[in-house]
Image (tube, one colour):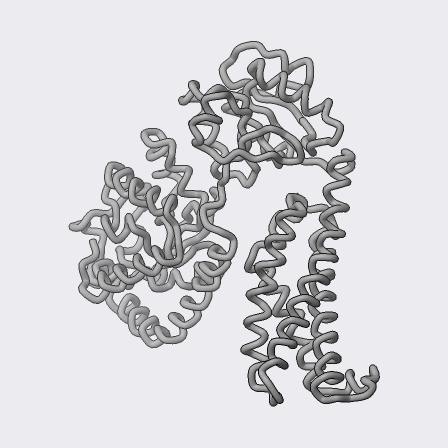
Length: 470
């Protein structure tokens, strides 16, 4: 949803604000603290401390803004959001810089600390806000004027939908929806065909979203049509589109979803972000950090297990298999081989505790979960996380979805090396157990947090140490 150059404009603006605020602080301290009569450009540029700060401080601000989600969906940013996020990140960043760069400075009195903090806080906050407000205001004006818009698909088409869309088109400020077409939800005729083309039925939803590069989906289905609504939402789970619903009185009074006004459009926004952006960033950093450390520490273990697998049974050391991951994208999971070679030559099969295909060493590796250790490389690649629902094969996903269509909700997040369902159930031996495990993974997704991830990792380590895995 980004226009070329918009993200780059935010990055440049933030870098310049960081560089300028550091320069202002440095010159201020030279004039006031060092009591220099004049601070020339040459003297500043030749100072090693200034050059070092100029190299590091602006990059620090870019990283902090990135962790806060300030480069996420740049076309969806608004001025109130800028004010709140710039204020928060400035407060956090100034405190970090104070302890990292300013605390050890020689000072005459503590007032100099307060003065430095104030100059950095006001200078950086004002400059960052000025640059971002300029870019965001320009973006909002382009959307309100109709120059920029989001490719939008309507699903359904009741009378309320027709009325709402007509009202949107008559708004003085364009809400930013470029209506590409609609999809019929229940087979009934609709007046929407006079406003936009019919692109198919609910079964065509995946194709339509891909073919027309849809960015926004507006659902015009009554709350009472639970089956149709569930089917539509399940199909959209694996797609990165924004989803909104035209509300009725029941939706508003029940408070079941958060009300939002996007560029003047009275729609209910379905918030699909499970964790705040800073927690998602921290979770990903934790994934990378733990994986790198684990690979370095466990390298001798990799060698020992690899030699043991190679020497005790014929076949490759590692087992690669295609699984379905984040947003339904396939990837190849890597594990130590625990079964005989060509164990699935008769087709996809789930293993059981007494499966004759499992080698003697494989049983030990499965019980201790040590066969999963190579998946730290999958985490580094971005295919997986440390904690998340276990990825399954497309063959078994199709069987699960027949009985539990809500399985697609698991694809909202990266699959994990371990999960709450994995800790509770271990390896599933049949589709029934997969569905039972699904309940725990859904509960995990709706309650995701860094604290919960740490707790699950702790119980996984206990399972490995006690060899209680199935």
